[in-house]
Length: 278
Ligand code: GUN
Image 1 (cartoon, protein in one colour):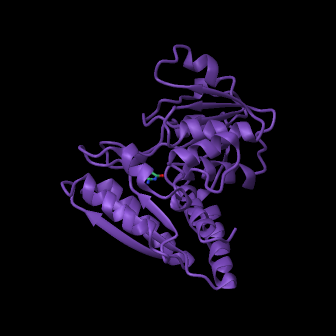
Image 2 (cartoon, helix red, strand yellow):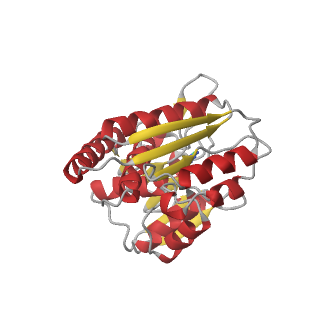
Image 3 (cartoon, rainbow, N blue to C red):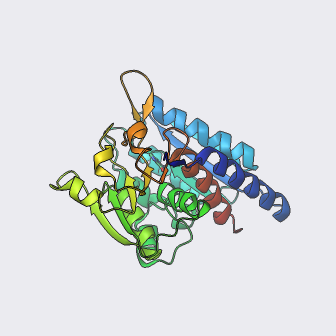
């Protein structure tokens, strides 16, 4: 039997509608500053989507586009200005930054209470101990999707493939807080198939088309594909061989239309939280 396709587009629309309603009821005007440095086309598309989501929710967004050679000092000065603005509740600096910028230094310049990505060391630490206001958007979006489809991680073996600071590591933490048994695999894991085949919930976050094939998935597993890879054919693919794996899994996320829209919907939720409403 073919897997249930987890519809991130539909759920993200529902979440954004709820956020819009909460903003109207609270009579507030949350503000998100979106900072982008350089001309990376994909990053500009992502930022466009985020601003469109803001408009849909009734969140005021302001875009700050700096040239790649603007320099770290100018970027840090902008963040400082945004940290001090009362009408800006959330600050997002789109990653990756061009060469010559220290991402960690830039992230640390963001006031933790405006760090809606949860990238600062303080917020990373808070996620680690399980006492946080902002959860990192992609892993948080995955948790919302699982919850919506009635999948409780408690007692399940969750295998996360990928160990990035943005997805793999915080995903493992959020799963752990929900009482899953968690294994993190990465490029140096020699027996990947042996481990992925044990997964009740498999999260792929590497950035390699067709990394996860049907033989790597246990029958009935939930398969979450976080990656967005642009193929030479111009289309977007995840890490999972979708057509084959959907015949083995119980649930699967498509790319596009799975995790991506959920990441953006929970960014709106984090911005609402930053403005003091839950
Ligand atoms: N680049 C890729 N994903 C993200 C994200 O979630 N936030 C930011 N700021 N940059 C990214």
